[in-house]
Amino acid sequence: MTGSDVPPSFRLAYVPGVTPAKWVRIWQERLPGIPLTLVAVAAAEAAGVLRDGGADAGFVRLPVDRTTFSAIPLYTETTVVVVPKDHLVAAADEVSAEDLADDIVLHPLDDTLDWETLPGRPANERPATTADAIELVAAGVGVLVVPQSLARLHHRRDLTYRPVTDAPESRVALSWPEDATTDLVEDFIGIVRGRTVNSTRGRTTAPAEPKPSKRAPAGGARRQPTAGKTGKTAGKTPRGGAGGAKGGKRGKPGRRS
Image (tube, rainbow, N blue to C red; front, side, top):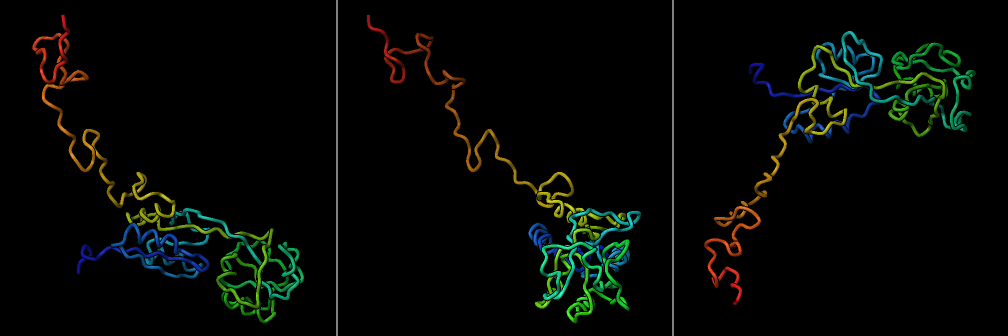
């Protein structure tokens, strides 16, 4: 099978915490003949996967290298601290970084927050992953500050979380290699931006239905006018005009003398 014979497909990478289901559903409705494959990647590996062609586009966490990648920021996440349910923090609606000063704050190697100074006390070792850090929180070793979507992803019944008002925030974006902006990438950009299927921006993936002609109603031909009709008086014999026959079946009766 040659390259031109390979059927088109679209590969979409996404990092933990991102839920692409809404956009995938719209893609399947608009482009049912082109399969979309989801590629789950770690946040730190997303750029490499896109650069190496492992996916056509991806939902990633900013920042990205803007000399290589295009990116459309989508939303900013709330940052939360994950704690055991019996922790003092659980009694508050929200906390600040200073409120965590006496806690061991775990800092996993796959952390996605851009900290200038990590709050609290450092652990002896950094957990390899956020999932490992969650296990340590459940064991009472420390607390963990993460984007809210990751707290939800790793939800446990014995843990809870609260917003941290002054922590760094994580931004999620759609990104792709700038030199690989294909037609399918443009199609997906249109979906993410909320464009309609017939939008003039980007590709049109379905032809617009023809508008009915103003001269003839859709579904049937207009009734042809009777020969000789040329205006409002068409078909009527002018009063007293040439060719008007008195007493004719269709003419008006003449005035009696």
